[in-house]
Length: 88
Image (tube, rainbow, N blue to C red; front, side):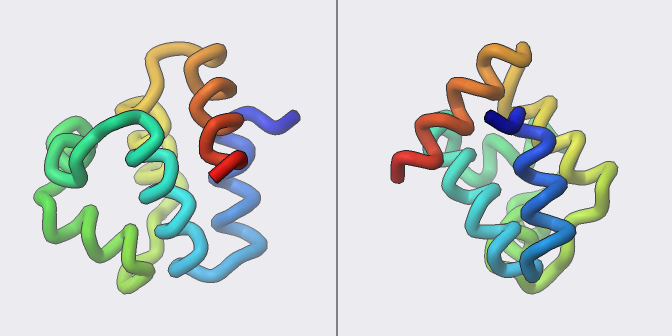
């Protein structure tokens, strides 16, 4: 089983920006966060987060790490969130 961060890195390296955005959106929704709340936690405005989730903007590695940190406070929380998102 991959950790949340590993899954995002795989998504970024093997899929296009739209698929990565879909993954981020699904994980955000599983975490129960509104887009503007995740954007605030990462330090972006809602418009930037929207462009990342829609695939209009590719997320850098640093951005992906910031998103992971904003969504999860522990490795076990990352794994649980990823597991729930996979079942969607």
